[in-house]
Length: 114
Length: 116
Image (tube, rainbow over all chains, first blue to last red; front, top):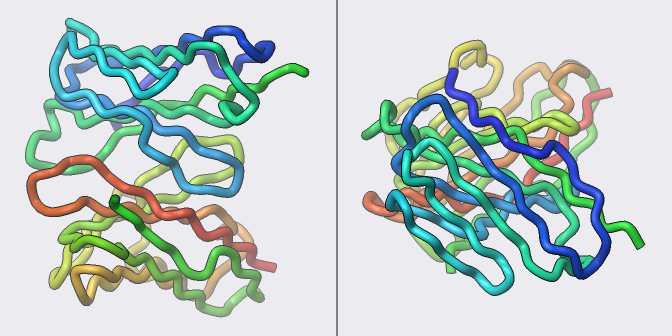
């Protein structure tokens, strides 16, 4: 099935650093979503992107829908301890139009080093 | 907001028993709900799509007779793991779409199932 490649797989950063992660696909997506999952919890929606080129912010988080519609990135500025968790990109492939199945990325695990 | 709840949050059962997990949309009507399974350190894998008033659509490789899904109302879907075995131990997460236009899926907090 459809796969989204997310990188990096894991990140170890110090508090206050900026974070950047991205998600790529071999096919076109018409929606990109970024979720954060804390241990033992369900994913929580951070940012939703609906148009190619769209740049959207949510507090310290910024995400963009790539022009080619095959990628998206998420940036976190000035990281804080509560940013720790797993970040998943997700999207609706254009080929699935009308079929509401969401495809998830492989996840980026963010750890903050004390 | 769009709040989705799941019950129970965790369950431990003996091999061979059946377990029912409930997924509720608390402040909206959900014509479509989804059931995912997540193994440790892995991404979410879609198991089935649950539509209110009709049969669920299962993904390839998911046994419909083992994972029974019922979507009896616009705010409730249930997943029953029948004759559970240790390999069914996993984190089960549901999601719901608000209305028929919005695409965003809102996720429940998950249910951790441990089969002994």
